[in-house]
Image (cartoon, rainbow, N blue to C red; front, side, top):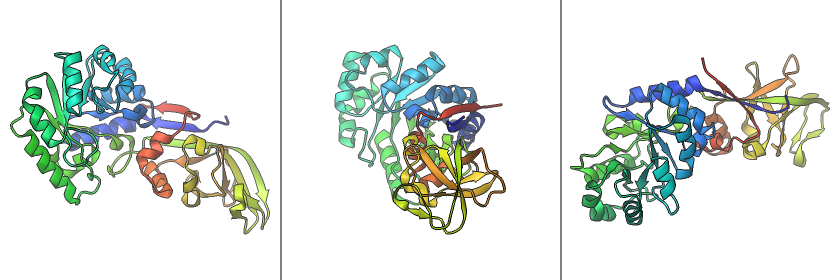
Length: 347
């Protein structure tokens, strides 16, 4: 096979959900964020796995993402749409029985006029200045909203991956102030917020990246593994160069393997100088540039030529690749391209 293989460990995914569920305070319901096609790993498969683990609430970014979740799970589980009730969303919200998290006065008016009696949530802006009703908007609408079929009130922490950041306590105080006296389920915490402790948990938590093996959940099990097939091996003499731009020159007689993957598959060019691949646990450095479809690897230290090399494994996680590329694990996961052969494993 000349196609790289992305292996998704569904048992690890379920285990991460159970661990974050256990980390949530007693009586708190743990939902699951499955937006961006399940962080690039297939929303339907991810949702079914998490439902079997115990999740009954799921979160997506936009209404269109919910179709795969509803098809996978059928009626029953709740699906929350973070972007709210946008223009053109009405039929989908109704037909798929979605719960839009309303972010503005305009969205509130659109929802109650188009779908009177249909459940909704409200997202509040507690200082992130991204999505959500500002305090003045909420004050104007609060009594009206609480008199409707409101299901959830939520906000989003801006700095939860930095436990000592003062913004966390500031947003917690604002959220408490805005929701004081509301007898409605509340939600403030994604993965990072869960790890901040029980005062941040409220009624529903919303783990995302931690489910998929990413920071800041340091105890997460790796979920994604990536193997790259070797399609050619050559000997390179000292002084010869490899790849575009002659950026790597052999300092010794070298054995160079070319593998089938590149930046078209979500492997960013910038990560090359600091990234390794593995052959049975032995690290081998990337040499030259990552090109669109190919990567070159120095396998001189190996005792035998490999058929494939591992880029994502227990030794090098999505966060390691993210650090090498100057980005975050979310971007690595969601950028993994459509050309990979995807293999789902579970016991």
